[in-house]
Length: 131
Image 1 (tube, one colour):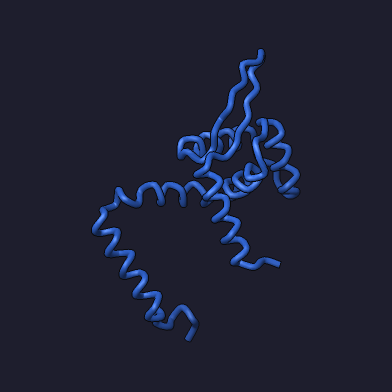
Image 2 (cartoon, helix red, strand yellow):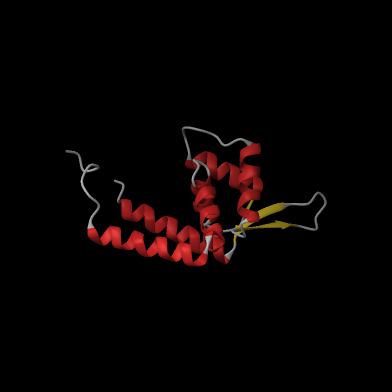
């Protein structure tokens, strides 16, 4: 018998029951934002973008170079980076800053919400204890 065939521990079952009650009381709309954030973070680029932006404000080109350096095995396309940044911006996690210069310069930085989420991602990574 594998560990997946074993019954769920009582503490975990109780926590899931409480969560199910909260969802049914608040309705699906209450957790829509949370589901949106999790779906946004659920691809191979999102978390690394978030973690790179955690270091501070970066112009678009510098952000792309930092991502390419961080991921030696694969490069992010211009299109994918733009799509991910727009999605983060739409969720209120990233602020897009356009300068008044000609041509305009574009930079990105995490909002306070983005910083909180990035910190939680760091905490999850630490909890996994990768070595």
